[in-house]
Image (cartoon, rainbow over the protein chains, first blue to last red):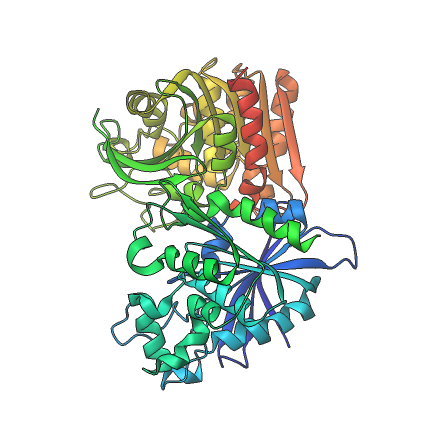
Length: 281
Length: 281
């Protein structure tokens, strides 16, 4: 699968690149960023997937995530995909809202027209992009982990729960944990999947856990001054689900922190150290 | 002097704020950012000034500079001003070029109409803003240091050279060191100050040193893949001037690094540790 490198910059003793390719899954050009630390010739490095939140492209975390120093220290590749298909012919929210359509793919495969043609972020992230990364970068795909923010935290948790054993570590910043129960999720799941709630279950972290999906452990940081905490994020629902299922959840409520990259970047190095301990074990 | 707080976010165990005020120096509203680490009640912390380059506002370094972890570790306040006056009635480059006018104040006090009314960044940075910061933040102004990038490196070096003893540390990323000799500088100095080159000398690092200005030491990082290296930056001229003057210059040529914030953020923690060693001594 060919790949076009849009830009590279040396950073923190590695290379930060932005790349694009013609995705067969979404039928669009997709852009993503990859940080590769310096490494011995022929060496393969573990891969951390970072999934972004509503309105983001790869650029938000690439510019503001403060992940490169920790990735260089621990020898981790970090891949940051886009959050939706984009381009001519890709339908958006009819009202142009930020929480559906462009920038809001919710890491699912849509079944409802007109979104079903391009909005296939589940298959893109689970199947197509790993193949491309394995082909073009010094990636050891036997050692992967996944993390994300908000909608991307939802993506990280649901993808990891549906693919047991694939990721050695799973963590999230302020994730949407029960999309079936909150306005962002209800709008997205009904719009992309229709009104049959059974179709929503594979894209709902709490429902996946209730249905038997398991991870050995999960790390979540959540800011207590996050304006979306009560209405959209509701980490207590994840806490309850994990308690019932016996999943070792570390949920850290961070006093004073909001929903922004100022919050994410503050705890990024700790998340990456936690991932590295599991990826390099 | 009143100050309006536009936004605050908790970050890295401190508070990142964006503030504005009606500047009596520039006759405009000026915006700047301040990071204040956690500190004991009543404690005063040293202040690092970060001056940005062409086209930037306070936001570039605030979002991409990766300075907060190091500032929190060392107990440093970091202040990031804007690079020019802005707003109704502030004249811009006649052709709207990026290297003159808005975003390109060059840290000087203009003498040429129509720029002389608002473009007074020298007095703003040297006199007005320190007073405001001392009034509104827990800043120990007996312990200040200064750094900057590109045009802001020029600002940091010239301001420090003109104010001996004020800054305990002075460093720069890819600074303009001899504006009188390079296209960016010649355009700016002639446009703001007129064609009399004697008026330019106080805004030219190499000329200030040749005229007798001294600093005990200077730290400079410069990327070898910086596209502006040969035409605009010319660090060899600073090296020559410092060698003749007996100034202890540490000039680190960084293989593969460009002019972007990927470069700056890679070495920010090292600069701040170097500043902290002098500010906390």
